[in-house]
Amino acid sequence: MSVNRAQLVELYLAYVGRPPDVPGLNFYLNGDWPFGDVVHWFYASPESTTLYHNSAGADQINAIYQNLFNRDAEAGGMAFWLDALATGRVTSEYVALAILQSAQNSDITAVQNKLALTTAFLEQLDTNREIAGFAGDHSAALARAFVETVDASPESLAAAMAILLAQVDLATGLPPAPPPPPPPAPA
Image (cartoon, rainbow, N blue to C red; front, side, top):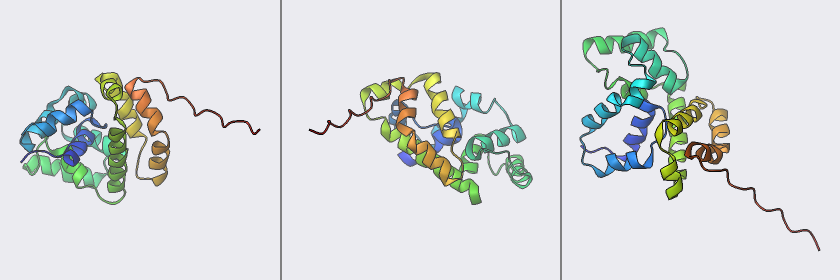
């Protein structure tokens, strides 16, 4: 089964904590890549191993919780995922995606908010200059830091959406849009 756009947005969030870049998104969408291969490539990517510090076990799970939910794993969640890894119900390769897809309570809201923001960010990459500008480690780090500002609260998503265009400009290295001209003086 090939990967679709919604799955890719989830994979980018789960494995690299940021919105997709357009060339990367198109690479996966235009190839007939099996889903498992794409998950493996995300998991093994330098960006993912940097984000998760090549961690395993409890350290890996906690880093995933921090990325997705902005918090440490609670004892019950940690025990569940450690057992899932130990028994082979999930592999280290798939655990980030599994945690994202099985989020509950306020964690699912945090994931939905982050997916809404990353999707909105991606949709703003609509010029050749923006697409070319959103590349490299610096752009990725800026976008990741922006996504980290969003949690389960509606206020965090509203605040991020309010500065979305400025953050896209920052991450793409483009100067901010000039303010609109003042209205004409009354005659």
